[in-house]
Image (tube, rainbow, N blue to C red):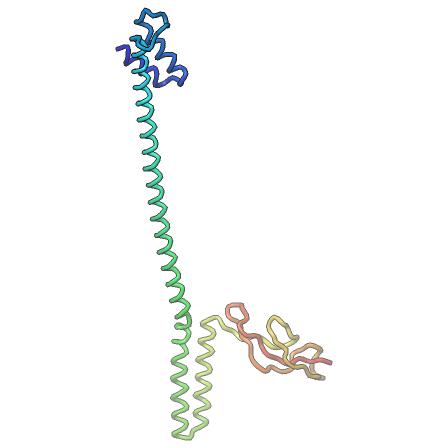
Length: 210
């Protein structure tokens, strides 16, 4: 009973307190008055208790180390799983983006196919009938269809009246015109277009220089 009580007290005490308690408890039932030899019964009891305490502490350290190792292994496995999931996600998104880039023009090309078919039919019919007036009307109709496609995609023609604006116009030549002011657009050499507010092709123009 005394040994159990001693062990319980030792578990919550400091190392120095443990040693003192062990020594004190060992001498309680001994008449040596603390002057013990190596073969003294209290000295033997003290050593036995110390060994048991040291064994207990060693077991606790090993249990703590094993627990830490298990936690580290769990974290490692969790990290590896997350890393693999992220890599798979990245590859999947890259593949989706590649597919999107590859077929990004599919929608607009599909819309143009009908107009292209109509143009081929108009040219073929005009070649057989020599009806160039009918061909002209057919081409004008196709141009109207193409404009409808442009409008549905948010494409609009850049205005070319008035002063030349470098943001929308590309001045490639200059000319002197009595009817126009300096830096004013005189001739449109190629139409420009915007798509949803963004310039996709500036208008190519000639401007007046006095």
